[in-house]
Each structure stands twice: as C-alpha cells, then as structure tokens.
Image (tube, rainbow, N blue to C red):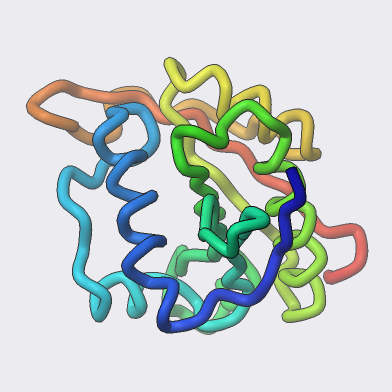
Length: 164
C-alpha cells in the first residue's frame, strides 16, 4: 500500500480528532479523557509542523503535530510531540515516517528540543521514540491522575544537532 505525507488542512480536523479519540480510548497515550473541540485543539498545538498521513484512498490514517510546552519566549524552541495512527495502521512503521518528517520540519522552524512524556506501560511508544533518537531524561513518579489512578511518566527528548 502507498502512503503520502502532506500538511494538515482544516478539513482534516474531524478525522484527526477521531484518531485522537482512539488514542484516548486506549488508555495509555494521554491524560486526556475527552476529545477537545476543534478550537481547543488548535490553541494547544503550533500552527506549523502539522502533518497527516494518507493511504492510497486519500483517507487520513495518522497525524503528528507539535504542542506548546510553554508560551514563555524562552521556550519557543521546545515542543511536545504528538503522533497518532489509526489503530488499523499501527505497527507498520508508518509512525517513524511521520516523525522523521516532523523532525525535519521542526528544525526548519527553529525547534531545538522535541520532548515526549510517555506512560511506562506504553512500551511500543517507548521503543518507537528510542528508535527515532529520543533519549530518556527522567521519570516523574505519580505526576497526575488518570481515571482516579496515579500515573508515572517517562520523559524523553530529542535535541537537534542543527538548531541551537
């Protein structure tokens, strides 16, 4: 099957949010428990570095975007990575294709650090980020609750060798 990466368009938002809901429902990808509306989603993510992956039927099957870590000027080159694939398309190596595109684009937009905070039980995401150059930089014990249960997060980051 052939896939194509292209910039995310406003018309993609419903499918993007549908795929995000799959991640929420899986219980190991995010602290979110409800899908945000379009306006909220758009304010949480940078306008740049938004990509979707389409299959040969022009259906969006995955997406990636960068989320604000902080609105403070000193953190303008640091972003949190969000990358989600439709459940039917996981495990095919497509996430790496999206992430590599996002890394290149992020560097072109002046980002020097990409970070990901991952639940320890999300072993597939941990392996995925390690395979793509992210390094473990720490563990946050019982950082927040999800559905009434304390959760840990492992912090990973990728530092650009181009942007400083």
